[in-house]
Length: 550
Image (cartoon, rainbow, N blue to C red; front, side, top):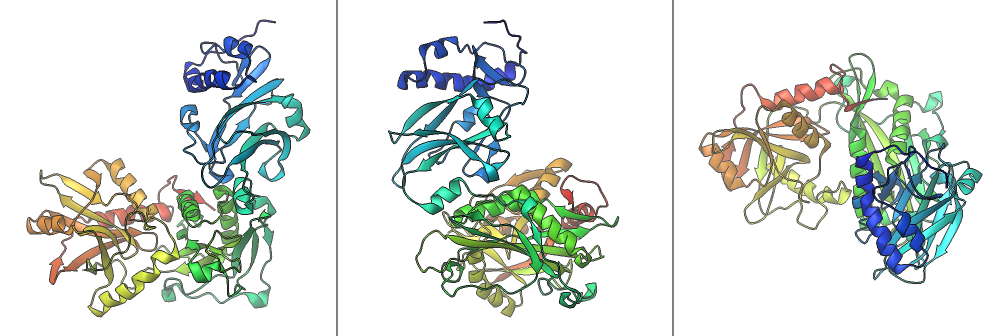
């Protein structure tokens, strides 16, 4: 065998060592992995340029890009030792990309699989293509056992990949159970921006635009909307931008009976420089995918969806207010539409996006609001869906909100548990700025323990505060007893809410168990500082990676 040259990269060798240990296990369990293969696979062998570890003339694994996740759109970069932990969630998906200059004669793919009570794996399919939408099957391995590891020798791999114009492959484990939804979740046709169809309004379909002074939250809608339908047999249809219109739903649609629905809230801003920007749309899409999974709705490619939303905004760009106190609110919505009264995962769904020019969420502007805190009302509980942005979390709160307004308050402070833990304020995350018992300034907010929504604004304020390094930043449980004690000891500096709709909103008072607690405001106000910093990013007064050009 001719001598080959290798480029040494010890960090990459450390990454592949878990795979080497798995090769030994495979050798014990499967005769298809030969003694010669295991003996020649030396963990100290240096890695060849091109990121292919070789054994003789056989390419055993590619490290150029290995990704795994529960669903094609959730594939993520990961270290190999984390990648091999399937956590019992099948199918186990891997995207293996090969560098074009690398010569591949044979490749072994190692897959772990196991059954559970709901399904049994039956086959592993290897597919190749220029992208997920045109993958073609090039190798199939039938599985005879419900659990185990398997080594798949993919013969003449490079020729097969070239036949489909691709340098990547995908393998997945199919379920034996004949469940179309499950199979579609494994290999969906993804949402593709390149397939976007545009149906632009005729002049007579254009809507009058309101004055900025008349803008209230969620009342006015732009000329166009985005729609993408899905069904369990065909996957995602082509995205379509069309004139705003009413939806046609069967009266038996699952969304109307079982609230299989979710939504997101994000904004676009017209900067002082005239540029249009989104604020951290990737975070909204990540949360939307998390809620979709909890709602038994299909997932989608987040980056492709962001591209579609950007295009919708470009078409309706004149609806983005020419104002630094207003913005364009974006409402992606996802509903189950199949006409079936069975309580089961949906086979049809619709994802659509609406745009609304909005002014300040509170008509009073940046003024402190009063809260009603009544422990008999609970917004969320452990094991529930409090961390998900689904409509079912909001409908039960409206009646309580009305009760607080009748008592002269603007919002509800949601408590939980026998110790009356603070969770959220209205539809916002809550923050306390205070002195701890050691006299240190501390910004405190409840933890992401499943009770509260993982707000994008919440995350941004925490990251800003940690970047400033001027006070302690703590995520922990806060009780009303602690708030009252800090108030009585003059250690409470400020309380405020934070969310996409209002950005930051200070609190003036809390009504709790028959007593009114007036909340002070530190000078200078931390909430005002946060609001200014966020506004500077939103409206382009400062350059920041959170602001994404449209």
